[in-house]
Length: 132
Image (cartoon, rainbow, N blue to C red; front, side, top):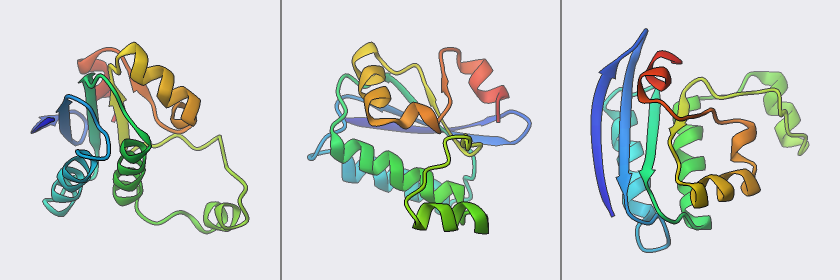
């Protein structure tokens, strides 16, 4: 797996993390670390470019979830209370983490795992950057 991190300017600065290869048990730690490094460098709006990801495992989903929680920051009190009770709020769509061009296989996995209910998925790079 290769990871490239770049900066782009929309209405806000956007950090793009482009992943090439599989995100699985042997690579998820490096992927998660790239998100943590970007966050500690000041990234608060992250676009994960999945154009060249051919496979994502449950370990990859955990890494996406960790990056999401990191850039999202603390939940508002009501959402935190609902989450603590196990009530998902499907009306919440992330404004801090978005996905770009997942391959059909990865898109299917994202939908099966429910990530499409809270993460925007974009097909166009410029539109994705402008959406932040």
